[in-house]
Image 1 (cartoon, rainbow, N blue to C red):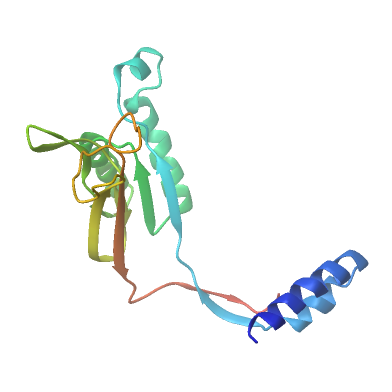
Image 2: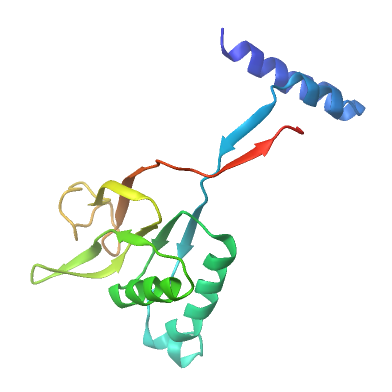
Length: 175
């Protein structure tokens, strides 16, 4: 059975890991020659609001730090929460100015007179997006803006499928 070797390795790690046999255990594991490297980041942008501005940490003050963090880690995909449309546009533009070009997908969680508005769960990606959708986390997922289960505001989730033609690889033969 396929699970037996996995349990055996876990058992060996539990036994020999405490006895100083880490090098021996590493020799039992298969060598990894190259594995795809896909960097994914989750980032709560916090919606732009007047209360934060009054306290000195509004979106204009946070944006440079957000951009610096993203540039530092160079993610291929970023899942964001709470971003308003103007925040998403500003972030995308600021990243492009630093040489990081992303496409975005996702829809806002609210509707006002039938017009989409409000916070997004947007996905920024440097990969080709094949398909994407945003759905309500409610009893009626196709009805954006719907609420269920006592939620104080509409809840949404965004997902996307990406094409990965070329992925960086990293060699790791020294387990």
